[in-house]
Amino acid sequence: MVALDYRLLTERLNVDHVRLILGTSMGCMHTFMFGETYPAFADALMPLACLPVPLAGRNRAWRQMTIDAVKADPAWLGGEYKTEPVAALRTIADLLLIAGSAPIQLQKSYPTTQAASDWASAATAATMARTDVNDFMYQIDASRTYDPSGGLGRIKAPVMWVNSADDFINPPELAIAEAYVGKIPHASFVLIPASEHTHGHGTHTWAAVWKGQLIKLLARSQ
Image (cartoon, rainbow, N blue to C red; front, side):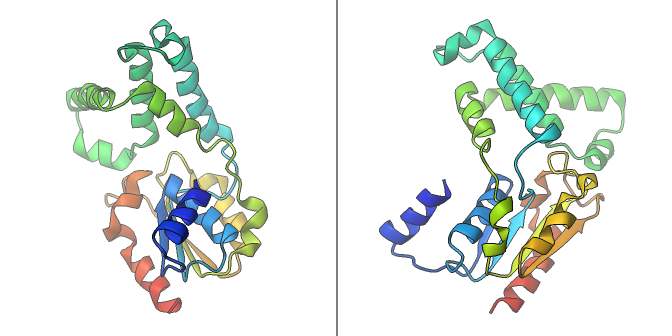
């Protein structure tokens, strides 16, 4: 994916250098890979909401659970379905909602039993309506060979790496970020504490939470 991005930029759009590569979630993974594969291409890197190691433990397990659920649904028909397999879709939606959830936000927004139940039903239905099973399986499994850990020392650009403490997908208690940030020559790691302003894994899309770190990165990479 990163190689194709690079070819698009350089061969089709005639871009031979960029000011910043900023990526969230899988884009965060791409940012690490971009930095070590093409170390002179960008002035600065800002990966948000990922870790620079293979997907293992719970992060791989919940993905595998969704894949297994799809394959176990007889309506999937080996991927040749004419209508979406409903049982598989429901499992996908439920696991996605849990993986992307933010406990503080959910407690604040749905403080009663009924409110939380209503949200769960509505959110699951909405996620099912916009999801295609085969497309989802490709997305969730595309990171299976991801592993930038051995090449982090090749990154030359300043790096501002930001995760949030309420991220189910990249839990801070693993202490992986702290163990690996020192392997990147010009990197800083910031863990945003969980609060009413964070949104779990989705904190990466709330620029107000991390824009200060972006300003610092741009200032030190001029």
